[in-house]
Length: 123
Image (cartoon, rainbow, N blue to C red; front, top):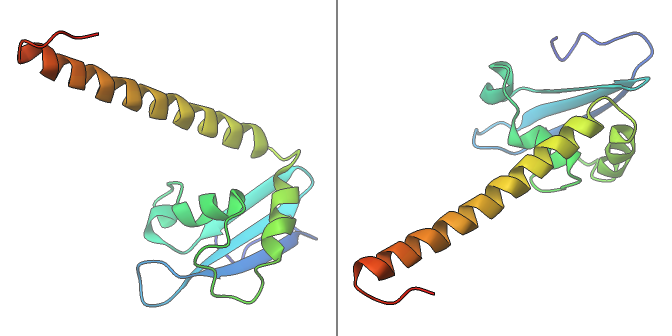
């Protein structure tokens, strides 16, 4: 779906987000019923991937917004509630927490292995 094609009678919010390119990216969210559509003009989104611009806004971040509608981030957060996106965001956040915990455990295990390989006693 392009940024100009939206369902009839949608609620819509557009943000300009300064990314790595000279021109800001346009991020648009459209809500109709419990459907929340988020589009971005960055390359990741154009290639069908999730982008940090949409994720940051969905998380309530005001970072890198160059449009004058910072307050609409709070509206967006209410749109997420009871949308089809909400349980998927929760699932993604839980998976990230699991990865972070595993990464910490791996770092600890590597440190212990390194100590053991130097003949040190490992606790």
